[in-house]
Image (cartoon, rainbow, N blue to C red; front, side, top):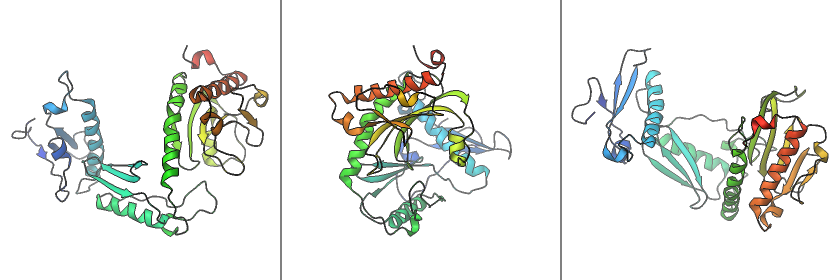
Length: 321
């Protein structure tokens, strides 16, 4: 496909963003062709492949293919449901070095919001204003969860702090421990979650599954019933809930097998808390250790091995040897 002579039926897509550099300016021209409604050809996109898009072997670079897939998903979907304009997909990234919220769209537009001490209501309004400016109409559930006495974002003028040093330190701590969790995850070849961050509980976690159905949990809410419908062994890091519990790494099995409470695990600072029904390893013990990665690895491995063995998991089939 060339700019001067695209295949029959294809027309160049113009991205008008008020003079801002968009996809066509960054990468190259995109084309689209509409077909019969309800058919596989209802919406077809084309890209003029140029030298800078190719890998050393001369093929289209994988990153460009993913960009095309991103655009096809958003443009194709909006075309099929009858929208008259392109609606980009948007990614939002917290930058705890420059202390800003970064917005990036699939057509190349970038915007930022500073992270600073303002009310939750004001921050919510600023975020939604940027989304509207990007041409994205989005509806979100504004009631926070997993916290006491929640207030809807648009009405919350109570909470207004932002501690740059604390935010950066917490982010750097997560970055430092993430490779240890990733290495731990690689040893398990059964079903396993990614290493992911839960905004509600504010914990970094990775969970292993053995594929067996777990017993019903009487009285559990719908979320817990789904989360623990199958046997799991989960590990993670949680900043704690003072004064009851300081920042700690944790490990638990659900359902918990008999004998787990008495299991011997490493390192020496690790312990089992009967109130939480979990193993904990204080973050401070890891941070101040001679080799923090080894301390955390020992905790992850020994707690998993104890739980998996006592629960009768088929470890030979689930673990990389």
